[in-house]
Length: 478
Image 1 (cartoon, rainbow, N blue to C red):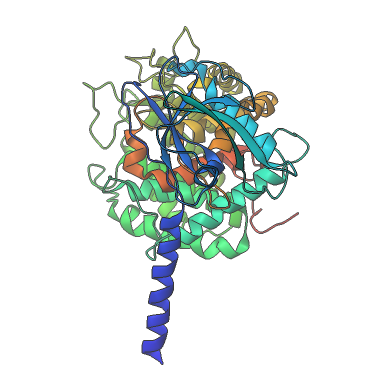
Image 2 (cartoon, one colour):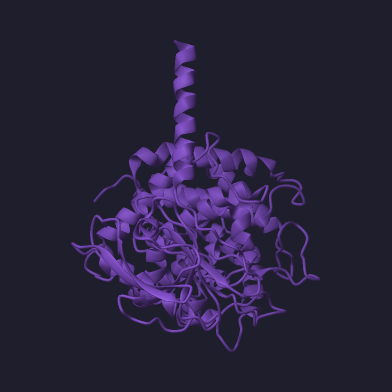
């Protein structure tokens, strides 16, 4: 009987992994300097490519059995018209955001998916010949993102992402990374946050499995006597954010000592000048990385809500360095105090806004940062060779620091949400116009679900990083 049970469980595990592999994955070729931009086409289950100045979307891949293939779309086709409209030109400039073909096809998919007759009309060029196609879209269970009164689609989308994450979580509690050997810890922390934000009691075991993984793989290596040992600061801060939000949501204090270890290690790794690096040493000739500082600040701020005693001297030293990195031209946070002009501002700026608002400090400064971030929100997908943390912390920063602009931001990013949405299978990774090697390191599928999930979850006042104020909210369905 025991052997039979093992065989059944093994078969189920193989079956589950097979289902996960069947989900469409965009065929993305990373372009570090922006020669081209590959992106998913949502429920069409295809991959498009744009170059600077293009109006037409070049089809790079078509998923087997998906809506695009069933309608006759082929690799090499160019989508020239969408719903009888010619798209605007695509620009590889980051400030232009989703403008051009992505905006038109994303909004068209959003409107059509909710229609009783869900057909998307496109005109393509196949070689020199033009052809009209009507694509039958998978039926959306609710409404358009565009109707601000109807949020069912967002909630169903978040729920689909959460279910996809549960299905793809490995037995040891982690989510598979990309090419990065230790990226699974960072990825797992964000995937765990999505499950927490989705607020489904049956997912609690998956959340705890994720916590146990980061404890064993990362937090257990911390030596409180030697800050030169232990995990990277990226991991440590993400672990702290995850554990703190978990305690605030559930009231479970069993992991408080682990949370304290993470925060103490971050404190020990701040120099007297306030700089921080990937690990103990400070890179770039001592210039450091402000993106590490802001994630540490957010971990400290959330932990303080859990009872962690904030180290005021360290907070002040680090915050002093953060303030020095602010670009006087944009009003946003740059790479470091030595390079405040860096264009990829969203992760640093949004993360610091969130930390300050959670902690209730420097609110005017935080509001000013959030205002700059909103006006530069076209850059949201660009952060340190990755898109994930730009969107995760960019949306949290505007939600907490400029809540009056949040609805407008969500409206602007409807095409992104729609082009990421797969038919009842979670989200496809949709990166930026430049280098997305960092997200490849984390794992496109896992981090793609995490980043879109946390953007969707930012609309709810649950996680403290999204403006939540009430402890013990998890499993409360009211």
